[in-house]
Image 1 (cartoon, rainbow, N blue to C red):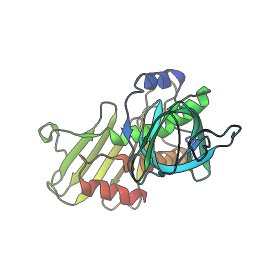
Image 2 (cartoon, rainbow, N blue to C red):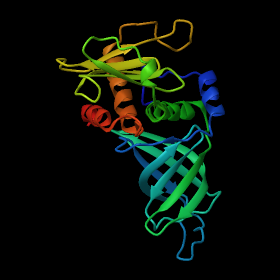
Image 3 (cartoon, rainbow, N blue to C red):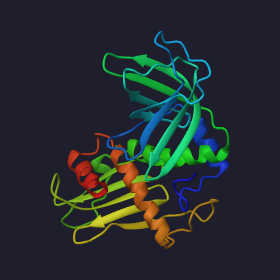
Amino acid sequence: MLFFKKILNFDKATVRANDKRGATRYTVGHPFPFKSIVTLIGHDGEGNPIKGDDRGQDWAGRLVNLSATGASMQMHSAAIAIRGEPCVFKLSLDGYLLEVPGKVAHFRCYPQYVLCGVAFDFTNFEIQKAYMQVLEPVSIGATLEPVDPKKIKQDVTGLHREQFKNEGNTVLNVWRLGPGGVIQSFDFRMNQYGVRWGAGMTELETYAVGDSKKKGTVPPFARLTDTQQEEVRWLFCLAVPNLPKCVPGDVRKFLGSLVA
């Protein structure tokens, strides 16, 4: 059920802490790799629920935002739902499938599409943990904000450093050939894990910045296993599409080319 087997091993305390921030909605960027579907109960031509329809109908769509307790998705205008009806929210990627039961929180109709909100009803901790793993890279990417240039230490001679942070432990550093110049390197620390690259490198380098005092984390600056390295790359691939527009377009395009 878990997408990440060797990283993001959230315990119940961490999940509960995220639950308290459930009202925070994170904008999902595009193209986000996960395919999203909502299974809605069937309705007749007059819009009434079809009795005995246990299978429902799958509606694929575009994710608008995610939170710790729900999701909002844009889908085809032919879809029909009523607030409070049961539904199932599904995320899939490369043979992985996560199904989260829930209820229709809102259903708004527009000329070209409908907007469906889902309030999750986690039936067990494992489903909630699996979902929090998917939410993590979305929140990492979507919450970055630029740091005041006056507060950034220019640490490499001949290069200009830009920095973007969130309120947690996520930091994106970009080094250029002068302000607005060609990108020469970057370092994207995503809480406990990071990915970096510099001119001349043939592949991305992954690393960990753990906490020996926190349960479920890797030791500080521990060497990652091959499986962990692959999962950190996936974390990077899932975070980059959600970078906000305050991150310069050429940076988003450059990082996007690395995950395409």
